[in-house]
Length: 128
Image (cartoon, one colour):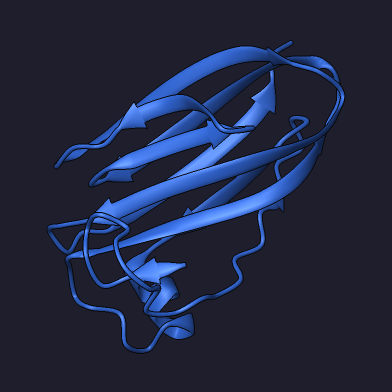
């Protein structure tokens, strides 16, 4: 879901599909740039937008590390529990690792771009 504000408020401006790519480390990665997002959402503002990506993923049992590289804010939830909370202006990279049981888990990634740079890359992997 894409919103025309930085707070995920109101009805989505658009709904699109962004497949996560297996990363060879027992997890997945998702990378979005404004140019790639505009290919799917032609009415995307130059800045001042937010998005929510959600999907069910199969996990093996283990200790998983999630990483979010972002500019501006990023939040990552697994089964409704906040794993990464970097919801502020500016960029950075944030990590968190926790144990997960085997089976299906809901992963939700929230992001906003206030400045127009608009980088979002989220990945997860099982820790050896």
